[in-house]
Structures are given as structure tokens and as C-alpha cells.
Amino acid sequence: MQENKETVSRFNQFLIKKEIEFSIKRYAIDALGAMAHGLFASLLIGTIMKTIGAKLGIEILVTVGGYAAAATGPAMAVAIGYALKAPPLVLFSLVAVGGAANALGGAGGPLAVLLITIGAAEAGKLISRETKVDIIATPFVTIFVGAILALLLAPSIGQAASSVGGLIMWATELQPILMGIIVSVIIGIALTLPISSAAICAALGITGLAGGAALAGCCAQMVGFAVISYRENGWGGVVSQGVGTSMLQMSNIVKNPRIWIAPIVASAVTGPLATTLFQLKMNGPAVASGMGTCGFVGPIGVYSGWLADIASGQKEAITQMDWLSLGLVCFVLPAIIALLVNHGLKKIGWVKPGDMKLD
Image (cartoon, rainbow, N blue to C red; front, side, top):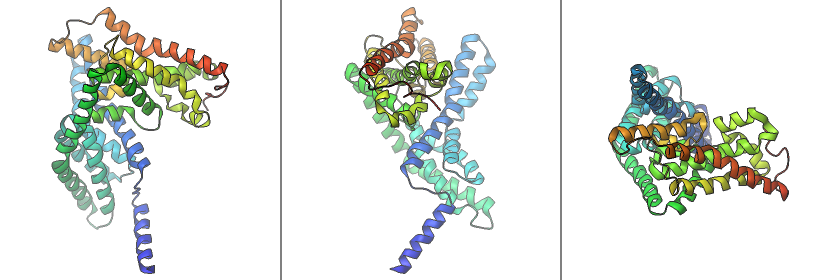
């Protein structure tokens, strides 16, 4: 019995030395969040470059944007490896793993990259610096494990993720009011929580009307918190939350969860409006559905979708109603609704001055 305890203890110490931590935080928060950064630094920024280049006739931007988008799989894998504290040789080897997983995962590539990169990175970390031929052993193990996992699992993972995303989008088309509320509220909450709404949307490939609802929910959180906390945080707070992230309010939410009511109500209202009255669709990159007004990536994603629809013949032109819908859903309505609801919460004493003060 004592010998078993000592063996377990030595194994745990080995895992600690290797920076291997089996936890929800490490895999579902740190790695998932990092994956979103990898997506942003490749597919999303590439799409933005191509959109600007095509609109302004700057061919070099279109070309550079294409190169950036082509590196999506490797960028995600390296970002995930960084979050998992992978040593250099493991981190560099994940480039090949990410490329394979993303290519074989198809439409559900981001989820395949996440799961397979985690397996390859942890395997590489186990062998790292354990042999005299580390320069060969570590990349070999990392790439071999990742490639085998990609070949065996990536198509199934990608298909499953794509099916779930497709189901959400189908349900939104079928029940736009109910699903508009559900998608908007859940993705909006995910954006403010320390997890990645962008990665969730990317992993499931949420676009179309469901993507519009997700965008509405994220914008409601960011713009909502930005305007209702203006007295405490001034214009600096408006910019940091409205163009940065509403996650900055997480510590204040823990102290007084009622401050979250106004942005959530705003998302519950704007989500179904986006799917019914405005018919706002995210036909750009799925990752943009979960970005909200962060760097104005969400609205830019909608705009790039408009251009793609025009190029494919699905849309004739961008109308004034398109611009009005985008402005109302992403900026105007979230601000008005959140201010009104928060005013009521202050009247009944649920929210007090200073509750949303940022450090």
C-alpha cells in the first residue's frame, strides 16, 4: 500500500515538473482562450486584411491576408501549446500538428485542432528533455502522436462539431425568436466569463442567423457594460470594455451578480430582434460571431460576409437597411436597453454606485 502511494507521489511530481495539469481550467479555459487568439492572429486578421484590400483595391493586402488565413491551423496549435506551457521544441513541432488537424477536421477544424493539439502537446512534454537526443525525440513524438490522432480522430471530431453547429443554425432558422434568445444570451455570457465565446463559435462553425444572434449577445455584453459603468470608469472604461472586453467586470460580477442583469436582458432582447426583424446574418468567419465589438471584429465580419455574398451572387448590394440593422443591433439598442434596465436596478437598490468600478 505504501509502495503504491510512493509511486503515485513520484508520478504526480513528474507531472508537476512537466507542467502537465489535468484540469478544466487548463484545457477548457486557458487552451480554449489561446485557440481564439490563434484564430484571431491568422484567419480573422487575414479576413480583415482581404476585406479592406478588396474594398480599397489594395492587392497586397489581399495577398497578405490570404497568407495569414492559410496559417490558421498552425497558429491555433502554437497558441494552445503556449497556454499549456509547452517547451520550445514541443511548441515548434505543434505547427505540423495544427496544420494536419485543421485540414482533416474540415468545417469543424478548430475543435479538432484544440483536442488533438492538447494530446500531442502533453505527449511531447512527457518526453521533452528526457533523452540525450532531445532534438530528435521531442519533435518526433509530438508530431507523430499529433498526426496519428489527426488521422484517426480529426474527421470525426470535425463532423461532430459541424453537426452541432448545423443543428444550432437549423434550429435558429426554424425557431428564430426562441433560439435568438438562447444563442444570444449563452454566447454573450460566455464572452464575459473567462472562457472564449469566439472559440466556441469557431469550433461549432456558428454563422448565418445563429451567428447574428451570437454577435448580438456579445455586443450587448460589451456595449452594455461600457455604458452602464460610464459614471464609475469614464471614457477609458467605455473603450476598454466596449472595444476591448467585458471580462474586465468579472471580479465585480462575483461581488454583486446583479450588475450582470442589464447586459443579459439586453442580449435577450437584441438576439431575437437580430434573427427576426433585422435578419442579421454572420456570413463572415464563424469566429467573428463570438467577438462582439472587440476591435469591431464582429461588425467587420458581417461586412466581409456581405461582400462575399455579393461576389457569389447571393446578394445584390449592401443597403441602407443593412447598415441600420448592424448599427442598431451592435451599438444603439444594447446601450439603450442596458441603461434603462440598470436604471431600474438602481432604483430598487440592487445596483449601487461603485459596483462596476474597474481597478
